[in-house]
Length: 277
Image (cartoon, rainbow, N blue to C red; front, top):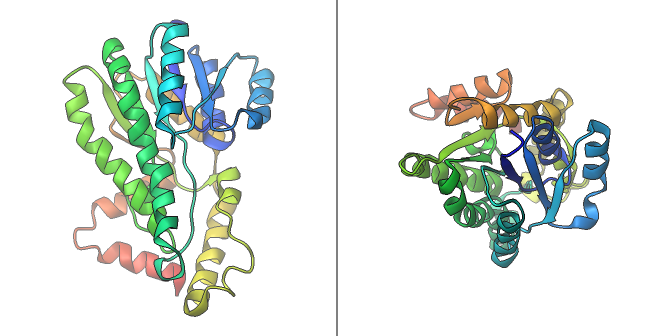
């Protein structure tokens, strides 16, 4: 893999960090990107501990100029791009009556339009190498979850975009897949920004939010490690022909499988209603 170049977005922590280290360990020349290079300390330390080298660069998925500059630099320095992992994203918890439309737009900008912007920039280079485009979505890209309206909408959009792109990209030699983790123990959870006082400030939705947060804390207490997801991403980069939809744990497969078999939506609604009751 030493001649193959992979670019991964959102590598300052969590899944992106572990995926970058795992890809480098597998032999890829790994371009690990992040919005703020000043936050690369944990990434550098993880690479040093693993005994691998990373090419760390700035890339802000919400800034088209930043994306173009980064991709152009990778091509100038490495001459090729064999795989891209759209991983950068931001969590968000809220319900529409209590938040602004601008807040929802911001979630879409990072989690959906960021994916679109990177994809547009890299497709010509992946086409040149017959490469792979992987996008980390979530089980929340398949099942709508309470108080995750904006986040799930963005992840649903990313999945719909990639599911539609996959057969078109295949005609020019590019493989497209989505990675669907369930609960993952990482800084992503802390970065959602929910305070202990959130339920008390949620008005009529306070009791439901309190129940949701209690349930979510329990789910994340038994969460999959980000290292396991990073290994799943590396598997999708190296396997002969990856599936389009890749769940990263048995729990994720069970969860997604329930939705895909739920033709009228009643099974999912019954399950998720219990989270807030």
